Length: 236
Image (tube, rainbow, N blue to C red; front, side):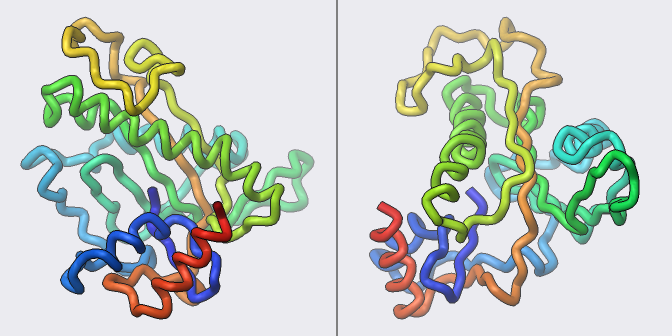
């Protein structure tokens, strides 16, 4: 999930990490804010030498934006470097000013955060089906949260999470919708016989989080960690 925390007592997506930080040593990893300059170099878990900033990967950006905001949106600008993670790629996008006077009545925010997981990005690096399946299940779980769970939480008064504009995935033929993430992988699956992976993936569009209201520090100060745990208790 995207990691966000807030000085306010209701951060959402950093909650599980907070307990781990409290139980671990103070030499925890460092996380930088979304607004900072992120390196586009792949992390160690990404296939060496693999470049996900390819033309094919970028070809999904505009169609995904149009699914969220309509065909009237015809351009975008990538802000800074893409964020290359072991199991996903993310980017901040600046969108053109929407025409509030048009008959379409279509509007969109000035900036959004897009995260995408393409099956073709991982086939070469994850030759074992259980490993590849795990990556796709990570994406499905996150997208289901934003699509199915967050609206229920919002209806109950929880508004600490970033606004979700779009959450969708297509793993048909690869992972059954009723298949549980905790179920062990079928070792007999032959990845070469799975359906064409070119259109398989997951896409998530969120509002951009302001560095003025949210931080991504690690390790956390004790008081901020306590706030996160109190928020987790209230959430449950």
